[in-house]
Image (cartoon, rainbow over all chains, first blue to last red; front, side):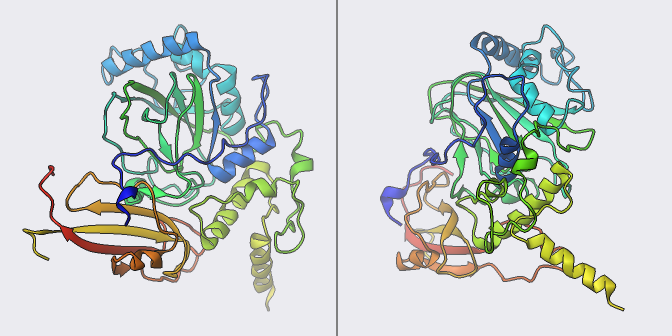
Length: 319
Length: 95
């Protein structure tokens, strides 16, 4: 191996473009069909700089108070698992103001619904010149369900390339792995490390592989993370006014005929770490998730599920 | 291996299919001289290129048939190759 390729605690490549997120000037609208399809395909959406500076400053102060009192009765506004998400961090909590900001509320309403409940949260602190890092992991435990939680990452201050932004691997969220079972993977092609302006929000599918990264820079990095559980089916919660036109028929087949203007093209997004066998299984998993989200039991990508389902039916009919 | 004068370096490589000639999609580097070492850039395109760089292949993942009823589940990366090479020991830097 070329010696020049070896660096310690170097930054991850960040060559991937921002996820396709609708151009929003009105935060009161829900996510679009394209946004949700991107979330299904890649496992995350990012919204740089959507929380205003004055609220970010107050939220940093509150994060510090939470850190200083964690696990004690003095912790301010401590929510409990199962609390309605609309009731946690009541006024005058700055964290609550962030969570109820229209730019965040539209994400929650669109992906897990306004009746979602609090799972847990944490304030993640990376001191300056902290070279420690987490192993790659998926949160919680193996989860075979199609219904999903979301995890919201809030970065109240600017995070530079050397600022210890969260590392993650797009497209890993639908794989059935157990916590740090994936810790052996140090680098996967297409891996990302968050960097962006103050007040940024990144939302993950709960299964996305991620890790805390070294912070070799001079700035203290604070990040607030919260996990929310749905309590009702996550079916067509977003702005579905364009869904009928966007939805592709089950026979939209990349090896036959297909419409490049339909949502199937977004759902087929292939990450650099995916080989052909991986990508095909991901398409089957995404089609299953898109069936759940749209309530369309016949939805398919590239005929994979339709072909198999039809043959199972034949076997059932065999005398 | 002479533990007084030599150290092992290991390189995990994951490829996009079961061929050693297929594209590298992931890697992890470990150096007996430096427990904190990392390799942030992969210079090679295919796993077989690592061989050509002088590394020795010491293990590959088994090719397993997926169990009935679980054919479409994806989990950890399937195509793993483990390379090693032995290098001169350097003065201890910790660990």
